[in-house]
Image 1 (cartoon, protein in one colour):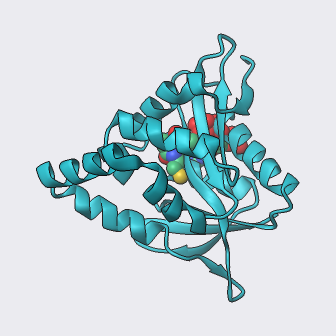
Image 2 (cartoon, rainbow, N blue to C red; image 1 turned 90 degrees about the horizontal axis):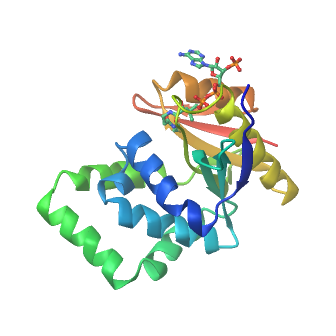
Length: 197
Ligand SMILES: CC(C)(COP(=O)(O)OP(=O)(O)OC[C@H]1O[C@@H](n2cnc3c(N)ncnc32)[C@H](O)[C@@H]1OP(=O)(O)O)[C@@H](O)C(=O)NCCC(=O)NCCS
């Protein structure tokens, strides 16, 4: 089995991670906004102290997978509003104007990142994105990324994590469950999961 290294994202990985996000999570709102938007997004997350982006590298140090999350998801909107910048917001406006169906993705996105509660308390830490190039990766790369990010949150004394996945994404659901996530809410399209770590 080939060796996989899990590491925090650096400037040199931004282009590859943006491309993987666009290819693997093509249906997401952020993917519809283009590669430059995704690069900027991961740069913002990489520089933010409440965010974490991990990258799986193959033996040639090529990125073959990524996972991201935040220890305080309430900060995400503020982060984007202030850090995307004028060009970033103009890009969103332009994309929505030339392709209005993107707005549907936007509302799906808002719904997805709505408040998640467990025992009446808001779960503020959670995962944002996750993907692996299955043709290039060794089996269990996804599992390794998931275990590593959970360990990172645990080291930060985070005790509850939320995550979302498409309800028909069997592999993602298998990985979430194997790492301790339990289904909190199941909708037709999306499933909300919570992990008590
Ligand atoms: C979901 C994804 C990240 C998983 O990464 P991966 O590296 O392919 O997954 P792993 O190799 O770690 O597989 C994890 C487990 O799922 C199992 N699995 C794989 N395909 C399966 C299937 N069709 N049915 C059931 N289990 C399956 C594997 O056997 C493995 O379990 P095992 O170790 O007990 O054998 C990757 O497939 C991906 O990027 N998909 C597209 C983007 C996406 O869906 N992202 C998730 C959004 S939340």
